Amino acid sequence: MAIFKEHNSNPVEHDRSIEDRRRHHKLVERAIKENLGDILSEESIIGEGNDKKIKIPIRGLKEYQFIYGKNSPGVGRGDGTERRGDIVGEDKSGKGQGSQGAGNEEGEDIYETEITIEDVLNYLMEDLALPYMSKSRFSEILTENSKKKSGYQKHGINPRLAKKRTVIEKIKRKQSMKRTLREIKKPDKIERFPFKEDDLRYYRAKKTYKRESNAAIICVMDVSGSMDNTKKYLARSFFFVLSRFIRMKYNSIEVAFVSHTTIGKEVNENEFFHRGESGGTYISSGLNKALEIIDKRYNPAHWNVYTFYVSDGENWAEDNEKAIQASKKLCEICNMFGYAEILPGTYSMIKNRMVSEINYTNFIAVTINEKKELWTALKTMLKKELSGE
Image (cartoon, rainbow, N blue to C red; front, side, top):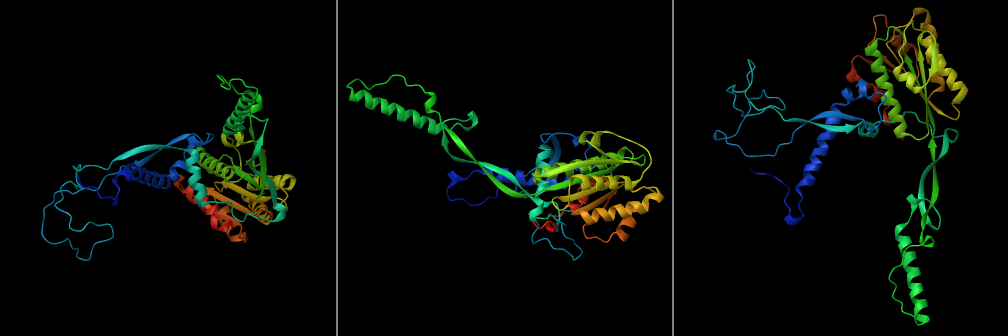
């Protein structure tokens, strides 16, 4: 087998495993990006920790090698009808290609690797951010950035024990004792010299601060009777990934959860992701509850406020006008108002009205017709180029 690799004049320094690891990492990266839609819409990830393992398929690696052919003279040429990716000069006798019946050629090697939810979210954070984030003086707060080492001290906690400095202090004490013994003309050979508490030295930690834009995220979900199990789990998957992503990327974030039928109410995170309800639908009830929360706790003059709403779009006709008015108010006070319509129902007209009547640049509406489109919807709502970061 012939293997093509970069020439290295010093074969001792060549480590083939480095190249193999690099290629494996690229394959894993590509597989994650190709399977993001399925990963993000997996119902089992809801409520799991960052160390939850997810299996993804990866194509096997094969080395380049020479193989025996027909040794026909000349080169393969096309007749002008070929397209990109076609193989020119391939044996077209049909053996092994059987469009009829089973094939007889070797298949492609596929194996599975495991990654954590945190790994997936790290890939997300490369391309996404909260758009229209204001960095004005009033929407920033001081947050603790890190604790830098700044000298030593005699007292502290064990994790900050400066081992090297402690040993130096012990050696200094030992040398001082030897000098004392020599001065009084006694043997300076010391058989055992244990550490003492006075030898211990700890790193002094100096807190550093940085200014960060603080943000409030309001998650509003329709849990009415028209939202069947499929729609609800897609909506929950959307909000689970959204909330995890935001909390990992930003430090100064508060998230509020609202669920609604004909009445909107604020719930805790566990209820939001696990409790099911039924009943009629007044979209305005959920949006007005979001407005109420913002008015009470998140003054837009001091907070970057984002509202995300997910529904199947079915609403009582008598409530449509109220829903449009509430949406416009959210656009006026929020950095962004995003509406995701999941598996639109037969009577869904609210998204069309929103798109035609809400003329605000910070309003984003997307449609999710199948679970693979969750990733596309998130990318549309959280475009990094809009954030100004």
